[in-house]
Length: 517
Image (cartoon, rainbow, N blue to C red):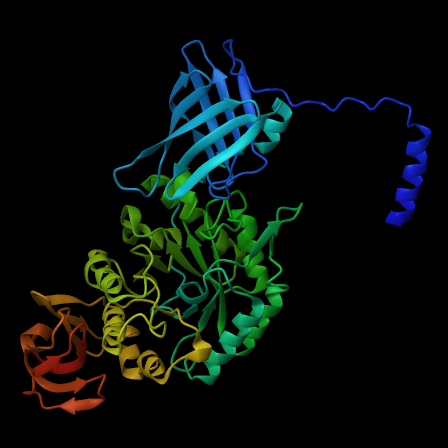
């Protein structure tokens, strides 16, 4: 067909060969506005993907200049402190996540080939050239802000009576995830015994989203051809499916967020059979940059999930900002992150578990402080360090979300993750978040009251050499011990045997009964 068209075109071209060719339209050279009220509008068809600045607008005012950028990630980005220097305009744009650098300096330079824009935000650098466009094209590229609802309060619904347990894709796979892998993970959770140990959620943490259709509904991308069928597959194995979104325009990996479509997305998730939603602030931190707006953005999705009528566990991920533990339950949350992302190393894990997460209160049935996912099985720590990781999360009543490739779980990792007595400390019905009761340098003794009156006691050696550590009945609030069990060793101990050798970066976890002081 193309060959036939080419032949016809060549015959037609020969018949008009003598006709002069029309002159090609030449793009207008950029010119800075000269009169008040005039605006230079520049579109960037080729743009740095993050933050994806697609439009520059610069207006001459009686007093100087007013302007803004529009980006795929952050929507409207106002210019500040605009100064003209010949053919270059310099201006500040608010920066994020860089301590001590609240703004970044940008430039827009007029060149014969267009307007060269340079600048940066957070770790992204921009250098791109655009062409002047008219008002209609600029309007098509503009960001349309969506107002947040008034803040309300969502009543408890009985979900997450104990900290949620399951698996999340991000730590191992990031956005490199697909339907086949999720099905294989679900199968492995069953065959390994991890499901029966209590791990029930299979959570796709970013990377599943496609684009919105003309109806505004979000479709999964080609890696996930049928999300409802995937949910059915997971459910048939006695597991639950979790998804991920953001109140911003983009998710952390650059996929489509829920901005402007919150209620619609909640209905879509419910129709697919989703049981868990992690809602990650990500690019939304630009629009929602104070406590009130962040709280209302999370309430908006909490209310939308509630309106679907489906039981969906709601995980708030805004990195522990604005005292989230104080209000997480009221916006419908069942768990809330208390920190930035964990990494697979002892230093980061211990900083989160020993320092960051204990600052937060209000944990208990229906609402949990979340120090992020487990790294056990990913290989960056020793067995002793991973045992500390599991013990610390259990003592903290933290959600237990595995983050490794379950299909290749080593025997050592499986033993740590599936240890029933340790999991029972985390899942204890009282929902008490343990805390340090005695600290001496790198040695910490933690206690956690249990529902049956017993107390879990953890000895932590944060130092680089093995040490002798002693536990006392007073650490548990007892006058004396009546029973003592080493949970990791599955061994009963004599109540008087209270001195232990704790390895470097290691732990001992005990369950103690006794007489109250």
